[in-house]
Image (tube, rainbow, N blue to C red; front, side, top):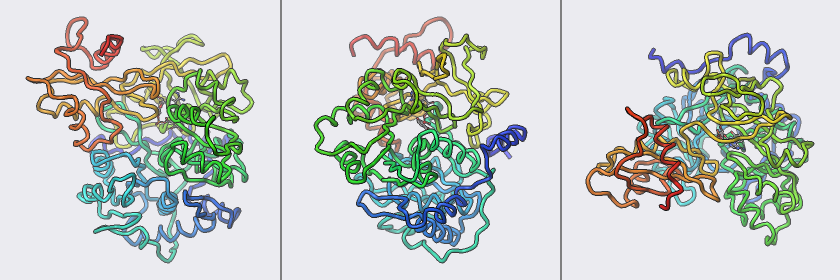
Length: 538
Ligand code: J2J
């Protein structure tokens, strides 16, 4: 078996034993949990869709069973991968819990992903099926199903299926199916990535359930909580911090928001008496601007979580006076570690830090370029290890050798400082990734596409400061011969099948890259040099 085919790096037995001993891992699976919730909460509403229709806990449990039988009938088995790309609709949860129950692994694609990403997920994971919607936000996802169908056995469509399998036709008589073990993988989550190809993050039932349960406790969720899923449901933040799964854990109700604009979101907050939701910083800014003039009653909202990218202190200070709710900063990553500011933290901490870790067993190291610990309070690279942080990416042994330390710490690529109170402040980033308002873009992935353009001799993609997004992307292109138009470069990326958010916001043509020192400059230093020139008028 080639090296990169070692699927996943398990927790070392002594760590697993410790996490069980401490009561973090309780031997639960998501399929088993849903059964227990159905018993405990019965007809209480688990999910309210945008159109107001509700789905009870027992009903969700039953539909997951029927769908598990349907997927089983298609030949989907424990351990199989299924790429799931669904918007914020109840079917997302029915499909995901059905797969959990079967022990098959959902691969969480985002609605914005296009042919390049979807084909890659299908091929890299050797997925047996792809589940998507018919049309979403004006885009026909059956086009993607046509691409995926080259490698997967089944494309399943929520809505009008065209030539594919209808999700609605899959609900079958429930069967007794052997479920997965708590230590088995539950799903593959997406990494923001810093290399040419996106990395997949294998999470187990044990570790993820711990992060979900502990998050629900930290955020004070209970049966009266109404969590609005505003960001795409498959993203790690709204899925688990504490997100939809944390809300189910607490017996609360999830409201699915189809679009995050203030008109749509505020109307749902009023109609459903939403108590908590999570957004990325640019969205928080839009909401802050819209709230004073909105006709909607937002008084039910108790907590606004902001995370995914650095939330500027000045904006953070506006949340409580403008939205009349508590701000909670969330600094998390799909690889594991999640930090929250707590309800009883002083305002100063809530507005100026990105919180502290979920678990007493989250190990944090802040180090210099040589992996030596820096003095307390000094910014450095954040390394972390703990009861819900992965030990390696899926089928990525070569990459894992540099993304993790020899003793299993994950190199987050974030530059942080730890305050005397133990809170983390994100000071910057050392990874080749652009954080475009919470959407992560690997510079290299876009560069690799652009290098395929006949008029591009060389290219470097960097993040440039942006008041609203925090950062946007700029492609510095050395043309081969006459420079093409910027619009052509952008259209080329779009045509390549990458998600639209990866299309460079700006294109600059240069004759040469600023090369300092002798020899071949590393791409990282090149990107740094280009960023440093940004003060020049473009
Ligand atoms: C600065 N940078 C942040 C923050 C994430 C909860 C919340 C967010 C994510 C997420 C998540 C940041 N300030 N508050 O999975 O469960 C940047 C860091 C981090 C990367 C992870 C969750 N919150 N970031 O954003 O996997 O650079 O997860 O390493 O998408 O986002 O991105 P992602």
